[in-house]
Length: 327
Ligand code: HEC
Ligand code: HEC
Ligand code: HEC
Ligand code: HEC
Ligand code: HEC
Image (cartoon, rainbow, N blue to C red; front, side, top):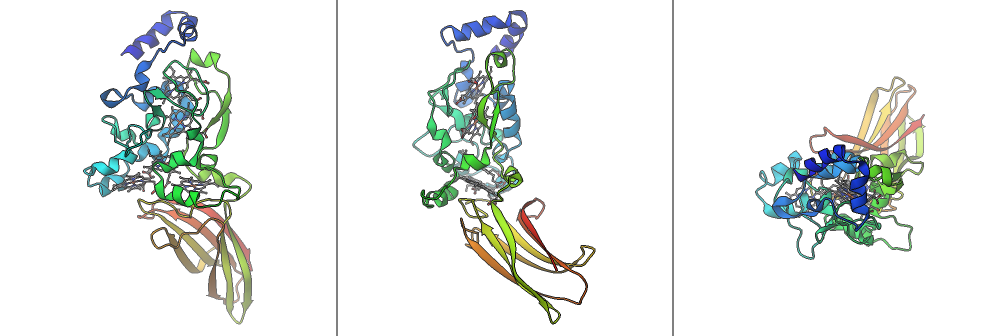
């Protein structure tokens, strides 16, 4: 209500007056954005100003961590309070176990889950805004932060020697971008563009880069006596956790090697799955060979290999890498 009132005030008052108020004693215009308990704000409110970040977050897995079907089913429709802590938390800034929010649970891991720190909004840089902002906090730049919930993945990351040029979770899952932090008037007029991070929490964007994090290559392929033999080498070049990774949910990655005829029709096929639980996930820097042997009847062939992250019902399939061998 207060906020809507201000919004309409903005239309009547000159833009300058709100800004002047806030720039003079650092006056906090929206204290309710840092409320806890029943008064905790919806993340939509953050999206009024931080519009780009909000739009990225709302399509991210974090925004769906409470509503996704697998979580709903596994908790027997939200009966296990223990599970809600990491899936709809009030704030990760606690020394005790992370507690769930009292309201807006459907927002899953929302803005304040990660940014509400001791009744202020906290981030990695020194900033001045119209809501309570804490001192800059370098914790936001560390893998430990993600490790508050991604416990197993973080432990694997921690186990890798720092002598190697290992990246943080944010380096890969939150790509850098230069832009304004806010897209709403009047505030956006006084804040310049700055370095920031996209809130996609995905890995799809990584595969557009030059250096493929995962690589597939064919080794020692021979073609004689009606047989095509060889092996496919998988290499986890830069991902400082296993592929797949995670402690919860269904985690499967499928490698497919397909013999194809000229028209691209499949002749023969070999599949191998990598699972976290079976300890067959591909480790950091690991190279692994999968041998294959196909029958050939003399047509021209090619061999196609893919590695795909799949889901339990095989309805979501994300291509992680591919390779082709022309015979
Ligand atoms: C408050 C707990 C919490 C924190 C902190 C957290 N995450 Fe998550 N994350 C989750 C949950 C829960 C899911 C599962 C969402 C789903 O798929 O339902 C998830 C999912 C993900 C996924 C997608 C996984 C998939 O299967 O596609 C990525 C990537 C990810 N998080 C990266 C990060 C990074 C990077 C950080 C640190 C900046 C981070 N997370 C911090 C709880 C958290
Ligand atoms: C009325 C506009 C407005 C709303 C609504 C708003 N913010 Fe902000 N916020 C700002 C401005 C302005 C800054 C300072 C921007 C700058 O320095 O470029 C800021 C800065 C921040 C920072 C500091 C980032 C850093 O530099 O480390 C965080 C974190 C933050 N906001 C989170 C939130 C969250 C979470 C919400 C919702 C609960 C929210 N904001 C709602 C305007 C807003
Ligand atoms: C899973 C945790 C997580 C969630 C959820 C999250 N953030 Fe962030 N946010 C971060 C981290 C980590 C950084 C700092 C990344 C870095 O600098 O490497 C950050 C940075 C920021 C910044 C500083 C500027 C920038 O672009 O880096 C703002 C502002 C911000 N977040 C606002 C929001 C808003 C608004 C939402 C909800 C729409 C949100 N965040 C949701 C973890 C989160
Ligand atoms: C070098 C870039 C890189 C870094 C650093 C990195 N990841 Fe990943 N991450 C990836 C790629 C690529 C994938 C997709 C392949 C896969 O499924 O493992 C992925 C997948 C994931 C997934 C989805 C689960 C899955 O296997 O499908 C989660 C969750 C995740 N990462 C969390 C983290 C966390 C937490 C950290 C920090 C401890 C981290 N990542 C560091 C590149 C990275
Ligand atoms: C310590 C924090 C934490 C707790 C507690 C937790 N989860 Fe999760 N959950 C995660 C994270 C992080 C992910 C993302 C994938 C991963 O790393 O396993 C996830 C992912 C999931 C997924 C996969 C969602 C998808 O999109 O496929 C399911 C299902 C799930 N959790 C169920 C549960 C259940 C059931 C409980 C209670 C027994 C629980 N979780 C407790 C952190 C947690």
